[in-house]
Image (cartoon, rainbow, N blue to C red; front, side, top):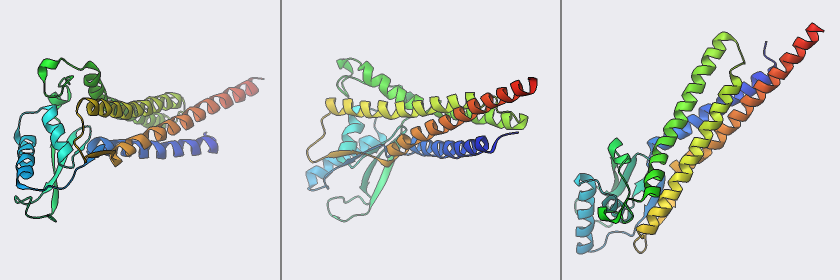
Length: 252
């Protein structure tokens, strides 16, 4: 039989784990990790340049410099799997100052996620930037590892419930702790990668960058997983100690 304190801790841990998993799933699937604010389009020459960047962004060969420049100039947002630009819905950009804006997105394919980063973006002769390459791969893989750990913990918890056993609770708590650490590491890798990108690709004048809500969702999910882990570990250890005391009392 489970003490009410342990049952309450387990319920709260399940709620926290569910919230954290939803948050990190939404964060992975959305593109608002980092966003750029660009000045409005003015003049025919500027329009032609931006239209060329936009067309290359949609249909051109995948190249870090090309899509980065487009993101800088067209109010872009970039996430773990998506890159998007904000463009007018109609063709005559410069003649409609208050034109309706639409978000055009392209996903990073699996092969693109593993594409090497170069010391000078777009210049393949500059040599591979190992740090940026592995930071990018880590930010792509770690959240998947985090979700995998949570799914594994949920399966173990489900079978533990069927068996009416609290024995696996400690292991489930450890899995949640590792999931939280993986999510936190994802955010750190992403921020470090963006900082290094901005060092080698300077932002144009009057273009500002800021963190998006998707990144904050991932950041919030990490402590939620860790709090769930703390409750699970506490419930497992406290129940174990109480069980051994009761066993010793009965033997005596």
